[in-house]
Amino acid sequence: MLTIEILCVGKMSQKWFQDGLEEYRKRLGAFDKVQITEIPEHRVTSDGEALRKEAVEKEGEQILRVLQEAKKARAVALCVEGKEYSSEELAGLIRETKQEFSRLIFVIGGSDGLSDSVKKACAVRMSMGRMTFPHQMARMILMEQLYRAETINAGMKYHK
Image 1 (cartoon, one colour):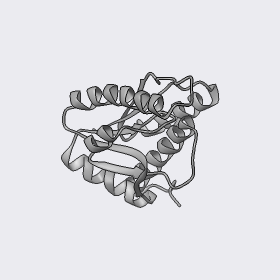
Image 2 (image 1 turned 180 degrees about the horizontal axis):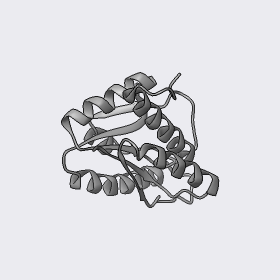
Image 3 (image 1 turned 60 degrees about the horizontal axis):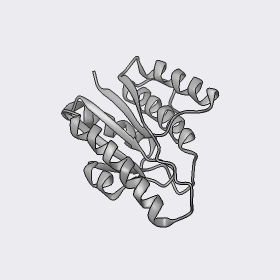
Image 4 (image 1 turned 90 degrees about the vertical axis):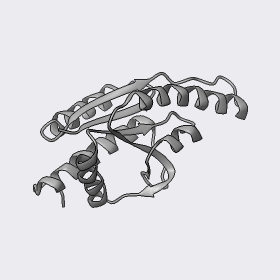
C-alpha cells in the first residue's frame, strides 16, 4: 500500500477545512495510507524581501530534513512553475509511483512558496494552475484530486 504524505508549511486554522481534509483522508484510506505533516511557518513581521527569503529558507531546511529521512519516496513540489497535471495524469503519476516507491510526498510551501533547494530535492514539480489559492485551500484541492485520481485508477464512477 502506498503512503501519501502531504508535507506542508503552517497549520489548518479553519474547522471547515479540517473537516473537509478529514473526509478526503477517510475516502483515500480505501486506497492508500494518508498522513499530513505540518511544519511551522516562519512569520515575517515586516515587508523586507530579505526577511521573506530567510523565512522560506528556514522552512526549506525543515522540509529537507523530512525528505532526507523518507525512504523509498518520490517527492512532488507544488509550485507555480511546475507542470499542470490533469486528473488522469495525476492518476498516472500515482500508478507509476506505486510500481517504484512505497511513499509519495506532496510538498506545499508557506505563503511565500518553497525554497529552490526544496524544489531541486523533489523529483516532480506540479502546478495547481496560474490562480493563487490560500494554502489551506490548496491542501483541500490536492486531497480531492488525489481521491479522484485513485477512483480513476480503480475504474470507479466518481471521476467524470
